[in-house]
Length: 195
Ligand code: DLZ
Image (cartoon, rainbow, N blue to C red):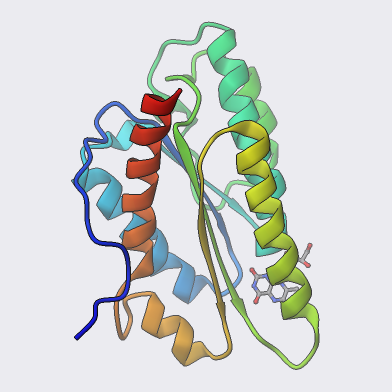
């Protein structure tokens, strides 16, 4: 039987700082994906205080949120902040105002993010909305990662039914959030080695 997904590699995430931005649409699917991603980050040695979670209303908002979160982390770093990134930890209900507030908080920095995971769940409805958002958000996230040079892990499910979403969120099948956590650590480590 073939196993879907990459052949595993092991990477030490203990020196990494990882951002996660998730949409709040389809929250029952988002939550296990977020948990799966965080669990793998922690399993790879990423410190809880170096995992920063922010949320936005829907997947459409993911590219701008990822871009601003990364920019805020760079600004903090250049201001010479040295304390735990845990100060930046916002609850998953925080709104975008937290991004600019974070940029002004010189206490809240452990350096720029080494990778950012963007998590969203798009479920096809009766209109063309799904196609427009899925296509645009995919391109937007790719653009952010190439423009900034920070790996952006594509954690956006684009599915036709609720059942397909559940099968990818660990509710009925494999939790893809775990793959995203592993990808963030691998790309964070490799990106720093390639720098
Ligand atoms: C409007 C909308 C719809 C219909 N469906 C989804 C969805 O399945 N998943 C998702 O993440 N967001 C959805 N949204 C919200 C948009 O992404 C966006 O938040 C709004 O259009 C406001 O810009």
